[in-house]
Image 1: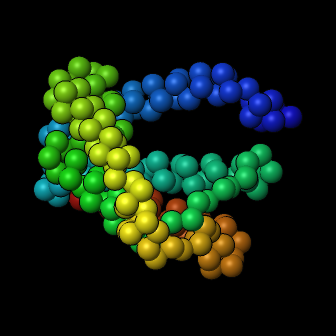
Image 2: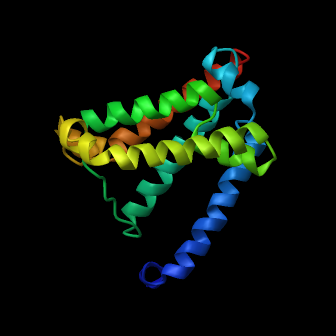
Length: 186
């Protein structure tokens, strides 16, 4: 099968990952979410471009992944989480986002179109933050990250229903939110 051959070919996976990453950055740039003013506008609730892009990605990804899963083309492997790791991750992400106004994806897209603040502030911040986290990981894992562990499952698994009973209403809700944002001029 094609996916089994791809799974066995690490080099091809890296090439595909690089190409998809470049496409992802290009789409972020085209959508405008790599612009500092757009991100700031989202935080000030005056520009909802970021929400529109994210909701559209959730909508397309959710349908695509579950359609492929329904046909047996992919398997889901959700990872377990914890309240501790979610809180620490949120704090780290939030600090970087508040200081610079970029998330890791938009930093990469902004660097790709020449934003020096993203290059020097964002990439440096990501590297320093990752280094600090790696150094503190043994202590954090033991004392905080492993607190409040929850099982690995999807929303349909948690509800014990056919995934499409969750996906279809969510698609309708997301489409209504997107239409509402467009209609209201946001």
